[in-house]
Amino acid sequence: MLMLLLTSSAAYAQEYTPSPENVASRQEFNESRFGIFIHWGIYSLFAQGEWYLQNYPIDKYEYAKAADAFYPHRFDAAEWVSAIKASGAKYICFTSRHHDGFSMWDSDESDYNIVDATPFGRDVLKELADECERQGIRLHLYYSHIDWGRDDYPMGRTGNKVIGRDRSKENWSQYYDFMNRQLTELLTRYGKIGAIWFDGHWDRDQDTIPFNWQLDEQYALVHRLQPSCLVGNNHHITPHAGEDIQIFERDIPGENKAGLSGQDISRLPLETCQTMNGMWGYKLVDQNYKSTETLIRYLVSTAGKGANLLLNVGPQPNGELPAVAVERLKEMGEWMAINGETVYGTVAGDIPAQDWGVATRKGNRLFVHIFDLQSTELLLPLDCKVVKAFTYADKQPVKLKKTKEGVRLTFDETPQGTDYIVELITK
Image: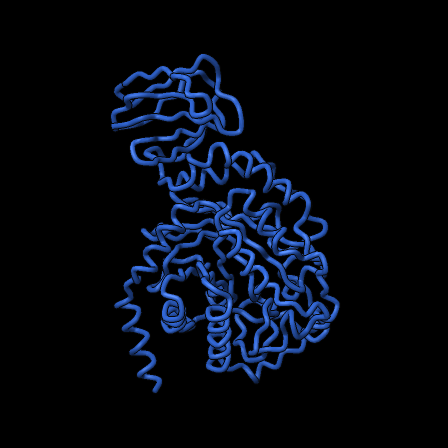
């Protein structure tokens, strides 16, 4: 039986070809360019971020008691989706189950979920899924491969401070079956899911003998239940067969400033996940939100690499999105309403990222995004022929001259603003 499983998994890895529905989903994903990540669970009650159970010597049974106090009475799926839609984002990625093992939906596989374990008793995922359907926002689901609370999860390099685990009960086969039954719930009860966003593979990256996560069979399950559903894995390594998108954590593809994204860039659709402040989950003292200008430039820079930005918001324990986050979403949406054409449906521009900014392309239109230029001239190292140049905002002509080094743009005054966009028509 084991040999049959391994043979079946190997065959899937070698033979995986995305279905027509999956290819269409990849195209939709690639054109979206902007999504919102939601990290929310009982950890928000402690207001210390989503790794609270791991970061302190906490008894898992004491931690679990937080569920009995979790009553997010201000949760309103319509308000969430409306605020996110107003930002210009095209999809939401919701943490269905994070590393603490608490399920944010009505799961039959564990009573440790928001319906059975809390006085709130509502299936927030069902409400969110229904509202996303109403408002035309695609829903993706984050699912952790790690569980710091379940005894049957074979412990890796994290969660070792958790008190109360019985390591004699570690049983990968049992835990793996549990995960797949939960994934089946998520993919059969909540409508069309745009992607399953796995996390936690890195928990065993220090093992002497590589750990077999049995990804092939799990990916095949996802694709069998919903052929259009994309599979992504935040594992910080080269994509595995069966994955439909490549994820970069806290880094624009090709950069590795956070030390988590040294992998090569594949030909799969790309996504960068990044926080709006410093944490993923709600942390009371973390009010260091990035400015709207910084967030817009990060979004545009990500598009300049041909990738999506998945920007995180950590809801409060009462169920509300933080006011500062809502304000940032609103301001980003106001910018996207005017300039979104230069981001949505674009591909990486002809010019690698520069100190002054980036470029995106759509057909014969090349958008030059200038963030910081201390001059009235800009030399673009272009090989293509440029027939016209003008400002995107007011369609005013920009002087251009072909040189040996490329194309030189000359402005009447130094470009200013969050993103000064020049449109070039090329041949």
